[in-house]
Length: 193
Image (cartoon, rainbow, N blue to C red; front, side, top):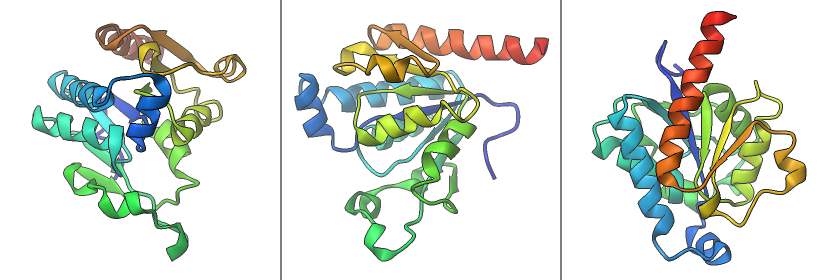
């Protein structure tokens, strides 16, 4: 099972090694947790679907916020290791059971592409190596729009941004508006094509 038919689905990506990434970006401790919970709750309140990889950090906090706010259309991608050596400590701590549905028949190498395929847009709440991989996968999978909050990162290299459908906003409040604009534009494109 994938996403619910006819529903719009927002992918949430961001760091799992949050303390290090907050320090590197000059963010106060706890900022990403607060923002992730807020955006998760916002998606639930707007009756939007959500997809993430809830191992820990930003994706898990967004899912927790989504469920606290009564969200009923959460999809967890839960990659399986190809061998025991690939099982990460984070994966043993994650909470895919919080989601309404789980896809667990993909590898870590397939996960970024499946996330881009399922999501109508990706919301970037902070950067990390994994977050960059998930963003870059959108280049090859339907050009999924990437919505990034500038105040939560030091920046995305211009060479990368040039090849993605990336839309920057200054803060979390403006992100909420950009989510609506992006999804409305997708609806318009779908009904006119």
